[in-house]
Length: 139
Image 1 (tube, rainbow, N blue to C red):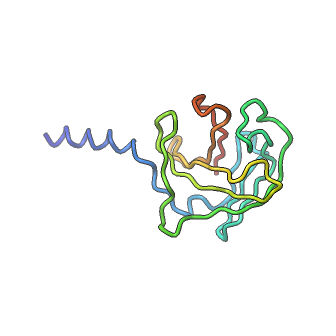
Image 2: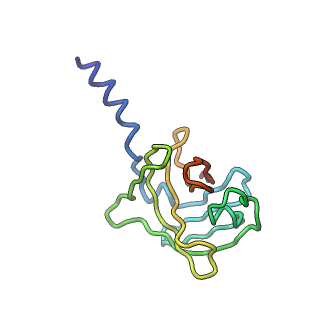
């Protein structure tokens, strides 16, 4: 009986969004090209550097558009825990918002925090939310 319970608990743990500390998020996150990044500072400032405009807008067809240089702000909740959401693919992610000024193509930008291969990634959906296509950045 104890073995069965342990297996069930391990199986259930995957359905919960990962716990994410502020220190997990602060720093530079780069996309797969290594040329585009998001910088999250502990003081709440954020900058997007070289990310294609279409990717910031969530447009899957224009991911390789004109790169943007944007500054804005992000916040880690005073409660000590990022809110959770379920993606259309059934994954459990935490998320936060990056807000910008009127020069931003979209604001706020919702950024999901997920675990892939044992490490955190920042990501947001591109195009149709049912397509399960993501723009992904790693630390």
